[in-house]
Image (cartoon, rainbow, N blue to C red; front, side, top):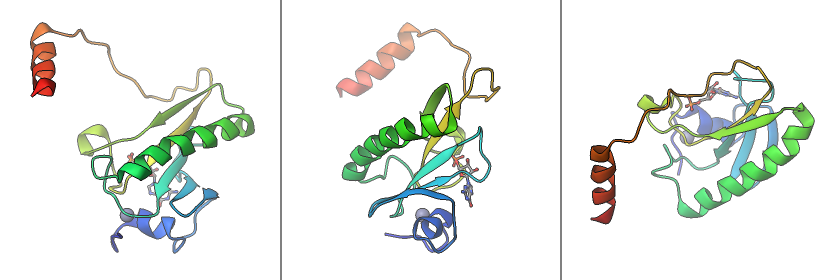
Length: 136
Ligand code: 5GP
Ligand code: ZN
């Protein structure tokens, strides 16, 4: 599966050059061209899936194992103090490239990288709505 208009399909296939940190038959791991922090990398499946909802189950399982392997090595290379592993689905969630990818973002003490939210409080209405939906 491939989308000829998709830039990440072309990068994953090696048709557009990228700083590749790792490659196997399923994935290519590249440096983000506009990094949030020093060492920001992206895991791209070689096949085109727009988002996590569409991702093949077997690849979904493999991607977290690969994320673990990558950040375990990269943390020593970049000398970071922490890592955010995150993945956006839909424009509302900040997705800008509609080919599934997982962000590996090294974090450094006081780096001012902005990944966060104001904590709210869980209301009874919302809790009931979600729990009853899950029970259906
Ligand atoms: P999203 O916002 O969709 O979760 O993340 C897309 C990411 O892809 C961004 O961090 C952006 O900097 C990165 N990106 C977009 N186009 C390219 C590209 O052509 N090459 C590389 N290496 N990264 C890209
Ligand atoms: Zn694609």
